Length: 289
Image: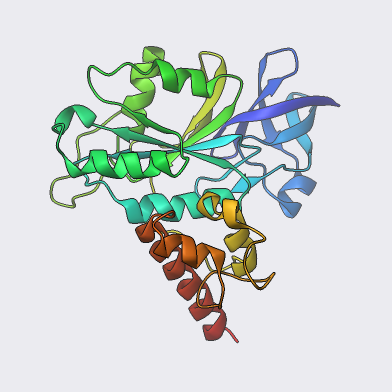
């Protein structure tokens, strides 16, 4: 058998990049379909049987995202528009929590910055993320994407975020040969139309990028509150400083994270978004007891 990486899935057809750099069209063999389905980013064993190339085995995954469904990701770039649709720190923070929980590094790219003035409130929000240690890139017509291209080098990256934020347009500007279909924002719905109909890894300069459909909901129901508390970047400088080792930074006494929020060393809105997620997790667990 030979090794390869799944770089494209349409229906039940899998494009596998071989170690030699060839793109091989494969199907999942029967025994594999009954266990777990391959996803983009999976490292696999495949072989030719008769006139078909079949994926026989999936290698262990380093990490996995559910939305978008992709494995072995180095970083996730949250694409958020400055306007149309409106910038949402709530969605950004929820995505950050989910991405970090999956063991993936989050980056933020704010698009359509050519549509806002220098005094727009979004610039203050961008600075809040940067001052908290997050990598933030800005994009729009007339903007240079050189720094973002450097961030993609030698990485498998996934672009995710709100529908209509311009993920496909961003990729088209970075690499015009993509020719990804883009559409106008649906004014009636106030949200983007899904323009990407499949999941695929694209070669971008010296890295790989997945452009995936937008989504309408996030699922935190299976998260462990303790693990979530430990993986949020804003909280990491204060790990081990709380009175209780299992502190989840909600209402425990002598909590270093809560104190940092009070002293404005952690952005309060992000902390409040974290508390919202704890409530969601708790409500789900209570519901299904």
